[in-house]
Length: 245
Image (tube, rainbow, N blue to C red; front, side, top):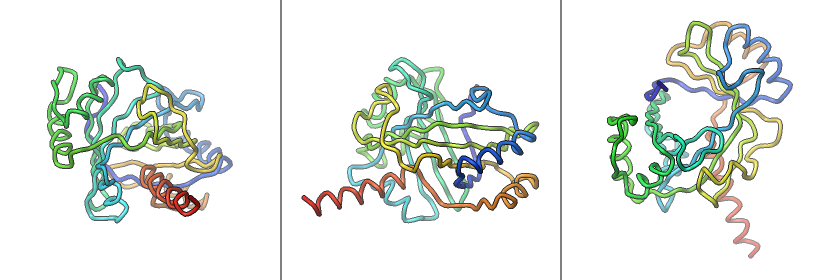
């Protein structure tokens, strides 16, 4: 069964292709790839982020408060309406990330969101998580789909310690039309080609071997949110269009 509740710290770093290859050579001595990443083959993750009409959730998040939260509908690769997706609520308090999610048929996920968090709970769903997500939806209603964000991922787990996870995302793509996951994972590139976003996710301290690797490669922690960066880019481009209109 997929893990549905996460409590962990998430640190982010940017890598070039050259840096990535050096990092993976060392990383693979200590970690195992996700079963979908054999031979360093990536898989795609597609998300629809939900927000209020005035973008309250992402605006609040960008203000860097002690507590913030987001809500998204996620699928792996390009799904059909009858495929399993995940409703995910992501909260962050003083640096600790709490992610709660439940599996749901993609078409049922759309209905659940459109009905303000009201819908039937099947036996495959996590009832407690559904109730929490429903409360969030009703607290901020109306919530609506705002942006699709997709990317290609490599993911690794430490040998003997699945608590430590390191992921690498590239070709981050976004669009603000066709906000249905079954309509493809294409979009405009958010970052230049060849840039990878590395995330180290763990509930405990980073192991010494990984700390040394970051130091040797001069890799430094950064603050980056895919949705946040997309939103700032969208607002900037909208202002420029108004200026030249």
